[in-house]
Length: 180
Image 1 (cartoon, helix red, strand yellow):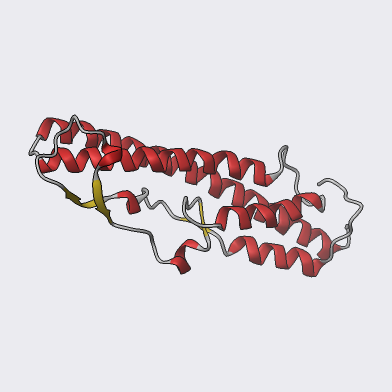
Image 2: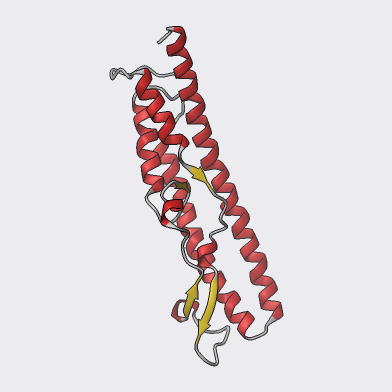
């Protein structure tokens, strides 16, 4: 545990733990990118997927996203990083990098993956519309790989969250026995 010039209280430790414990990682597989409908006639696989008009599954409900760590479409990652940084700045955490830096690095990967999944879902929709089973199989494999990569990143975010909470628990325990 690092020592800070800013003292913290047992109440503050409990508040930080409660705030960080409210966040959840959800292996959603970026389902909001799933294409439900593609518009246009004579759509071919040669077309740029960026130009296609599609209707997607859409986002999860906002009340779910607000605490969904790793969500590409909410402020939850920034909120988590901000609280975790306060814990770090208070000297409670023994980790090598500010939590927000780790979170931002992982979330950037999710953002890029989100766009990759969006393009792949469009390709799949085109292949499905054109009854191209070979292309569907290729893109389905890509979508599965994206899903696995997404889950890996969420596992890293969850591990960071659990590490921070565990170190908060240790600090709370030290307060209880009077060693802080």
